[in-house]
Length: 121
Image (cartoon, rainbow, N blue to C red):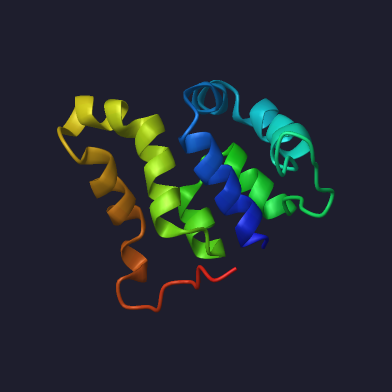
């Protein structure tokens, strides 16, 4: 796994309302666009050709599979915050404040007695 590239995706998309909206509305198209034109951008003038997602990373991002991303070593905080941005209102309407955070914790409860995957890049 390219933890750096996955974490760059999570960080970049979470902090840009337009990217977050596009990712929420059509994840498959947005992940492909991000991987081809947004992610490789180093700055306004330079592009990198070094990084790409693995198939497993790409599918986890497309499917909003935050459990798989966690298990692959995506940074816990970046993983949580982007999906709060996507799902918080939906879960809050059903279960009140912190509902998505509780869902996230519930889905990761099997990790309570295990060492968390390393987030080192």
